[in-house]
Length: 373
Image: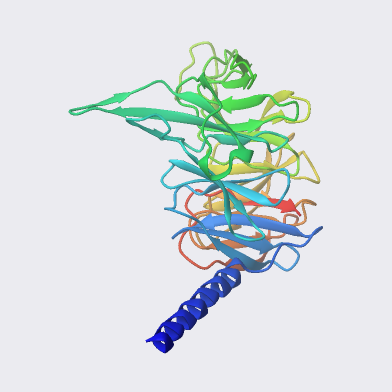
């Protein structure tokens, strides 16, 4: 009997040791200081790290719960990736060295409510706080009540049981946000707003729906990708109609593409049209090397001269890509989203360099982010 118990104990110890070994193996290697990496997410619930120097898969982490939308932001420490996931209902912090979850905020923090964020979360510039626009629905016995949205503020130091430490009212239809270097929060809804995250007070930083520009329509913005770009700007594309005359006949109007940008260092905002609207792009970014060049992607990859409003070059793609991302120097252009591969292009020639195939399924509307450890 004693020998049997010893044998069982030995088997248990061996199984536990194997489990820990497997977990360590799954975590993969730690990231190297000074190296440039790219993160992206995909189904079934993966967080991938790409080595930018070699354009190869460096490691993959399995995230908790379920996938969707997989929107990721890198923390200022360049060690932790924060991901909006689990069907838009939770935010997780993933340590990229160990693949362990170090932060978790359930956005359904009020009993009886289901809370979700439509891509709208951000990190403070010091990495100590997480901001999320929560759209709550109260579940009653026979019907649902859609309640006003709110900003919830979390402390990253609160770890796996993070609860809101501050909440503030928010406008409806907020779908994207970024924090500026001075700690203020810019977020996009009917207009672009600037908020003091200590008081909850906000003002219009850049009008969109209320943009009364003579001879033009209001701009239309549909953008779900919070780029952490080398230019350190909060940017997105818009479309707008330039009317022929005071009659404002839409059939005679000239549809244009433009971009809007908020410098996260200075807070200065500006807008600029750069092309006739001849095809749809889901995302666009200005070159880190030349701010007069902007690249857009969806069914084609296109490169424009902003001042001349001229198409410089376009490249056909093997399939649709949603999101365009630069490396830090602007020497490489990555296309992500949709399927399970990242396409790498030369931004000067628009020639494809290679495809990086990722384990798992499609990336959906994920935002690839490049950073240096």
